[in-house]
Length: 202
Image 1 (cartoon, rainbow, N blue to C red):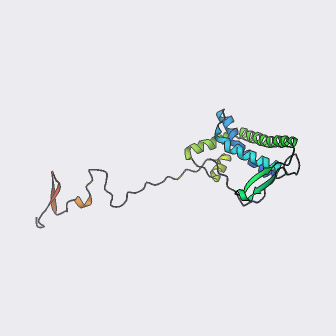
Image 2 (image 1 turned 90 degrees about the horizontal axis):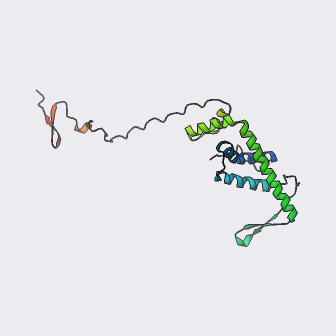
Image 3 (image 1 turned 180 degrees about the vertical axis):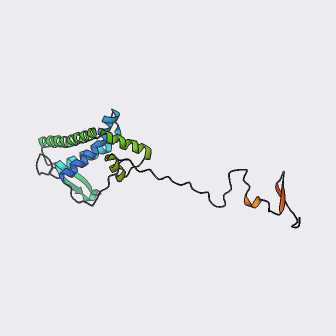
């Protein structure tokens, strides 16, 4: 799973930014075809999000070859749990053109992602290898790999000391409370360790 964190809060996006987002979303499917040779359902959510963004670019934001037009008026049914219904206010021919534009935008993002991955295949393989070894990579580590640099050694976690008062698992170790005093001698019996106190003047 890949996490994308915003560098700052944004309330509007440029067309170039949205096209870059679409290329990122197409990266998973493209990588499957390039490195696995087959496709899976893993990219399903990315494809759905990419299609929604492309349709909004065409129908709401006027970022397509159809021009600065909005298609489909949204209506809120306030008394039905504020459900939003899409009112179709365009012809069948316009609907076909909208579908073609959505496909063109997503296909362009797919071609961009494929070209980018093909030209950086070695870098992608080094990132995949590092992920297998470390499981998680942050942004700085990914940047180092893209620059062809080695990652710093991962700090080792020191062993956790046993809690105080815990009994030793080694049967040969005698607990302090069972050790004989210096002025006594001890013998083992069938019932355990028996200590006999010796006189101090011996």
